[in-house]
Amino acid sequence: MSSEIGTLLTLAGYFALLSLFAIGGANAALPEMHRLAVEVMHWMSDRQFADMFAIAQMTPGPNVIVVTLIGYHVAGLPGALVATLAMCGPTCVFAFFVGQVWDRFKDAPWRLVIQAALVPVSIGLIGASAAVVARAASPSLVAAAVIVLTALVTYTVRVNPLWIFAGAALLGLGGLI
Amino acid sequence: MSATTPIPVQPAPIAPNPLELFIAFSLISVSGFGGVLYWSRRMMVDERKWLTAEEFNEAYALCNFLPGPNIVNFSVVFGRQVGGTVGALVALLGLLGPPFLLVTLLGLLYAHYGEIAALQRVLAGVAAAAAGLTISTSIKMAGPLLRERPGFAHGVAMASFLAVGVLRWPIYWVLGVLIPASIALAWCMRR
Image (tube, rainbow over all chains, first blue to last red):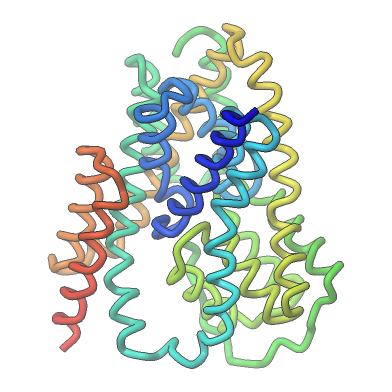
């Protein structure tokens, strides 16, 4: 029992802290989630992490719900709730209060400087997420080919990613990946 | 990500009640694959007319400025604007409730059947496609930066990519150093 509560507290503290470093959205925090869940805490394997990312991407809704899956995997329904609340809570409170005073400083020079400083940080982080997720999802050459092909197609053509997910799922089911 | 067309400023005349807010954010949530922001713009500006394009861009700028899940921040910011604390809570619940239930159900199924060989193969395929999608999204995000003349921003983006994505250093140390450095550089460039 006490170890369960300990796990929940770990989830809560960890995701609450991480949310404040998610510059550019929840996906920017993926590398750190992978580092903790796979490498530090050994909650799951590389493949399981890639699976959860895949499930979260297939599910409609904000990207942040990958956190719900990790929480569920680690500690069931309480884990899912705690992880989700922790990842959203602190920044929601922040957003609530900053929203009230935004008008006053939205054109302030320091605000624009901070924004200019954060944009490249988040671009780098999203790139890092892509690298980490691609590494976790490419145990085979065919999988690597699917990654590259999907990247090329979705970059050049405007297509609903669900179709590509379905195609890749069929390839996988056929034992090709 | 989507291009924003400036529209003459006119105050959005319609204000939603809590139930309408909840429904709107639930709909945004379940219709958005990957890009919830696109759907929120369509709903808020084009369909319900709760915000003008200008107001939406303003709220979007704020949510990019804040850390954490952007669209979650947006629900709180917009909910508060139109309905105070209740509005913020209702919008947040509408946004997170449906996907939370759905994904928890999927997590339950995964816990029971995740090790079945056929499902593993399907997920391996989808995981690869999802990773590819993330790569193209990240390249699109980097697009405006890549078109600029090389400056401090390129160095900062490269540093955060290498430190977090390749060297796999903890994000806290990386950003703890990189954000102050980036702000200092941005400040110097501004003058």
